[in-house]
Amino acid sequence: MDAANFGRIASELRISSAELEALVRQGSHAADELPKMLTALGIDHADLTPTDPLVLRDMERVCALCSEKRRCDRNLAAGTSAVHYQEYCANAPTIDGLGPRVNP
Image (tube, rainbow, N blue to C red):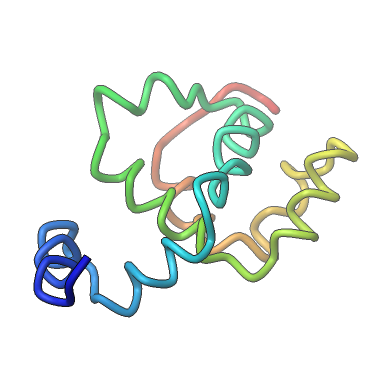
């Protein structure tokens, strides 16, 4: 793909070409932790798709570019995400802004 088309796609996504390139490098499973984290916090990922698609897309972008994957994966595996996610998750403010949720 040429630079002009790549730049156009980035613009349509409202991100920079550099950020789009970083997302592409991360691969198609780079945000796999997000639905798991939301579930751990009592939030139904499927409920966000129709109601908040732009918020969800931004959260996926943030998750895909996250540098705390190992810590997140460890907490998800241990079942301690609800206790610790605010310490490292760049999506924590957005997650907290989604409103009340079921007790995790």
